[in-house]
Length: 480
Image (tube, rainbow, N blue to C red; front, side, top):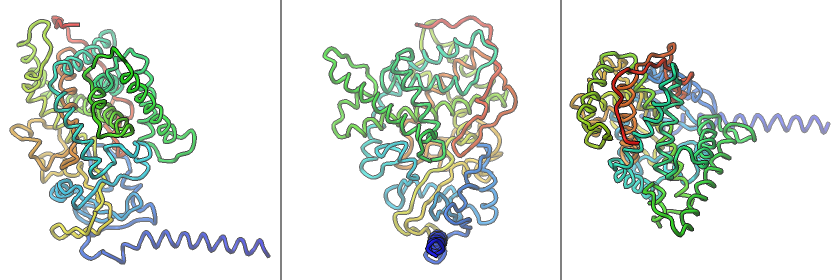
């Protein structure tokens, strides 16, 4: 009898729990739905999240958005990431959301992201904390991007990578691009050379961190997510040890890296400084290497674009002395290179969408967005909108002639408003300098068909294997 009572109680508890989930899920259907966009909420709790995150080619919007936009329009309601959500594939609403950060909308990434990035990461903090961190990032980028030492480091690293290919017939380009970007960013942020033991240690932990960042957020020992949290703790310890070493070094001479500047900043806590270093490594490593891979992928499919790019870099190199490095003026001459980069960003969509939430009830045109709802501006849908970009699914760099990215509301690969990516220019400089030496020194072709996939993070499943062939020409001398 007691067992029967316990089973009955357990059954009632489970039924009540499930009923509560269903009620919570569909509660928004009964309140604040007047004038909200049309849409569907899907299953209780998970809503339509799994369908929304279904992998698809990154140069497409995917079946979920295709279906929902055709049924409900460019702005619709859904239930994603355990929250009632407004999804925007509309250029004007996206821009409105980005420009009203901290006024009407606020950054709102899922809690597991906070757990792995840290509570002080610039990617997740809001308000005054974000303003302080972003101001520091803008200052560092502004003073770094045109510095000769930084530009020379980029070129030296690019040459080290490409020189190692001379006796190879095939390379896995994504691996090579990550090696390049990591060596550049770890030198710029922490002043470390590739061959130093600390660099190897940080890279190992950082790879574990990256795998967990894009994994299912389940903290059980042995899972990628748990290993990533542990890897972040080890990276933090390594960075703190480097900080202490510099502070205690009596004869230490400044290296001119980000860490030197961080040590002079009194407005940031130790955790914020460590998070700033990690954010810098993350931005300079993964997204920049993906941009490089996108550019090489699309150039390989467009012989006219590759020919024009190569001509531009031949002209730049012809004006250089035998042992002369590239400089900021050379970078500014790479006009078609910028068009190639912009088009690779538009077609490749490294960042598909961002997470926001409404801080209050918001009305925009005929749409009503209830307070507390999640809002997802989808950049890829705008980038691939045929009404905004002619032949939207074709790689056509010439579309960017005489167009300014800074004033182009239909192009937001680095976000917008107060959260516009502060390191965007550094990513472009590194990509441009690497392309300079790639197109002048190698021919390449893809090893089998491969397309970048959005999970929603972007990945080349096979790492983009390339067949390579050195271009036989007079070697360009350079300083060591």
